[in-house]
Image (cartoon, rainbow, N blue to C red; front, side, top):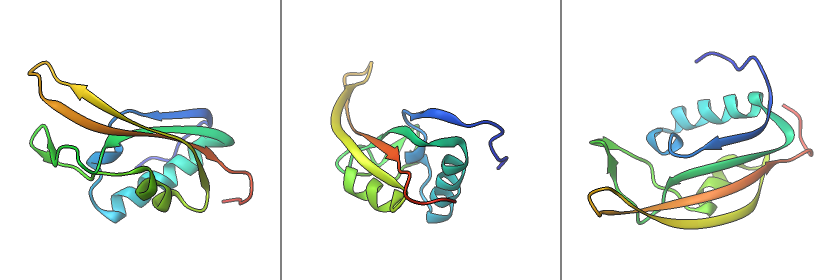
Length: 110
């Protein structure tokens, strides 16, 4: 994975993180996130909720809650908002999502 060449105030992930099912993949993502997001910046992340689908496009997914995401992002990110959403697909299936907003805290340095 290439290292980011710029830094951003906001990182918005609508549905990528839940495709990372291993701890190694998740930690690599978080490392890139911490390189690309400015301190004090915001992460908005959408994943399948704990009671959401187990697969998407025939691929396995990792399902999350605000608490499980907080544990993965600790101690560098502070949860500031959490919402659930029920997405209705074109086929009228309900997919349950977890959206969480975090602030990249100023307490630690990489």
